[in-house]
Image (cartoon, rainbow, N blue to C red; front, side, top):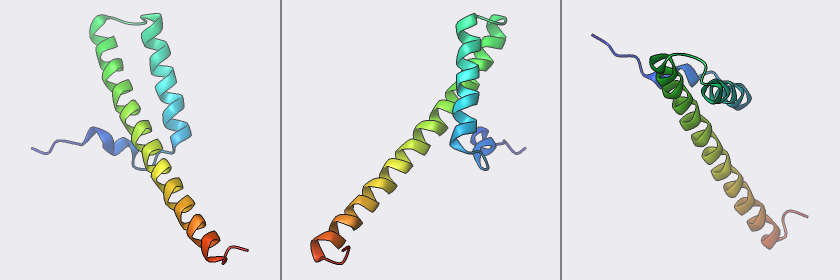
Length: 81
């Protein structure tokens, strides 16, 4: 029996799509739109989107830090002018 990874749905998803879906799920939770069991599933899905978005932003921040470091090294060496 194989168990699908719940994060697989994010493999081809961009950040904008994920954050939009997260906001929709949060809105549904805020409206209390559904039964308790339905809202628990919505909460679980929202949490997965939250994790994906947080990891995406952390990765982007790391890339920016790396680029800034490279730029600083080039400027120090005088190669960036």
